[in-house]
Image 1 (cartoon, one colour):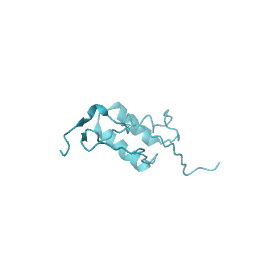
Image 2 (cartoon, one colour):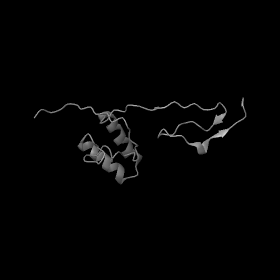
Image 3 (cartoon, rainbow, N blue to C red):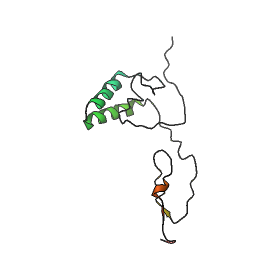
Image 4 (cartoon, rainbow, N blue to C red):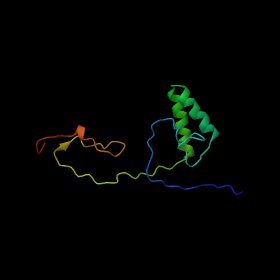
Length: 112
């Protein structure tokens, strides 16, 4: 059959990169590798990052993945508008999940 040179799929929900090594997203056969992207060198570099605590292995992996671009980051946040009182502090920065953290909020006197 004809080889596809590219494919586009936009889920729009986003992923949390809970492992900096990417084995859950970019390793061949990974559960969340929905595009079925496969790259032997990436698999080799991922394996190194999970079997050593060397930052060099992580840097080598991240540089390679950035060059290959198995996914394209499409920022969709913010999806909502936040309006807060002028004297409310601790509201920002918004956390990486786009959630608010009221436990960090506090008020200051007006004009401060």
